[in-house]
Length: 323
Image 1 (cartoon, one colour):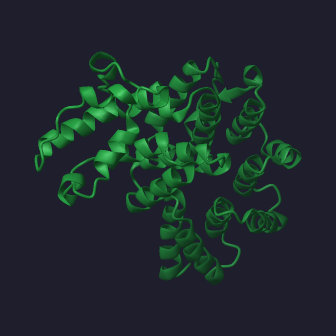
Image 2 (cartoon, one colour):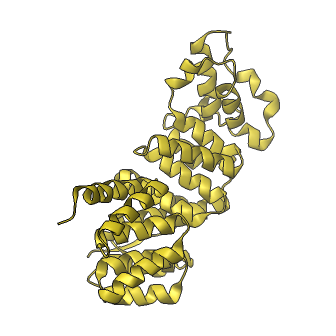
Image 3 (tube, helix red, strand yellow):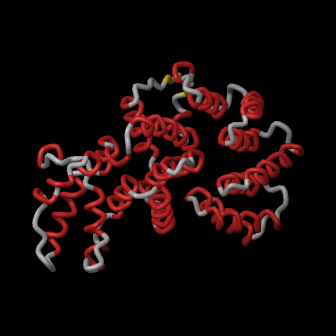
């Protein structure tokens, strides 16, 4: 029987890993492992947290060591297979998928993702139930988002804009939608609601108009104005501010802001999703997929809907088979 401190570190370490607090997760899980060597409940999440923190060799060594004493263990093999997938270690991945066999949903799902990543979507067949697991769903969204990003610039992306502004009125109200990316700055201020000094309502109307018109630089200018009282900002949803940074700020700036918000509000699915988008812009697809996985853990229904919508946007047919 493990002690209370070990159980506490295991529980909190597992939660920290799943929400992306990787330093805290590693510290807690390593403490638990030091008290209970060989404990799979510590080894598996620790290996994944180490991998996501960039210590892939250590993560692989942990799982390899466990599998030496527990040959063919499906739990360890699944976690190692995900590491092989992220690291693009094709031969090692194929061996683990073979070890898992067809009875395990993870095996055909990982195989389908690897095939789709090569652009062979017509050959990728996903188990229907497997597509609802966060590890599969998040990585599928990452692949679809990469296709989308190669075609549509973030500064003028109607699809993602609609995700965060479902009541978008920009096409009806303004002739400068997307104006910043199209050189329409000369007419932008003409249609902006007048801001009365010291009047919160007029400022919020201008802020809303800027976002709905996809004038993200103007939105950030209004939001980050030092003269704006702090309590005006406190009552607003920061997803819009983060989205605007994703659209027009340097990728590393958007990714940093996303990490800060995800750390402060780890159960906010939008923060993790936007972190994934920002990391893709920063040319970090593996880290982006981990952020999308975290979003899927929080709201698999919404992320599943996004996957379906993105597939339609990009003309991709996701082939499913009943288990």
